[in-house]
Picture 1: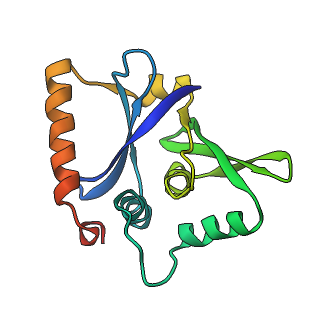
Picture 2: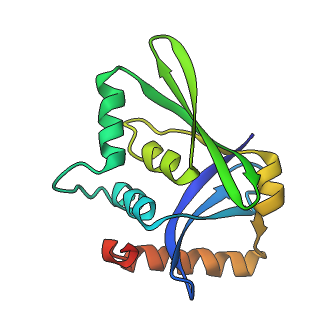
Length: 161
């Protein structure tokens, strides 16, 4: 498994499809893993990254509260497989001295991870990065990252609706 970090979420143009972007956090860190996700999950991740609270708990907030009430914690999230264009992930949860691995969509797993009270490490299988990872040339990479950061500063939750 290769450690990755969440760069953020954005809306891909012209498809208007939300995308979650992860970046390799080991070695030269040049590979990016773009994963198309649903609007509700994009909104959930965006809200958590921005520290926004909703009047009522969203599903991911509810699950985070349930974990806390049960004395459980998420210890890691791993993007484990890519099959026929579908990504698979596992959430590793520690509860009562035992470790449990729960199958999940990567977007849900990350939406929970960004809500955890302590940082949760994110990983991607080497095979997934090899198959779907994208490498940007250094100048293009910097421009793309800067453009993405500018986008994150201007995006609103309504953009994901």
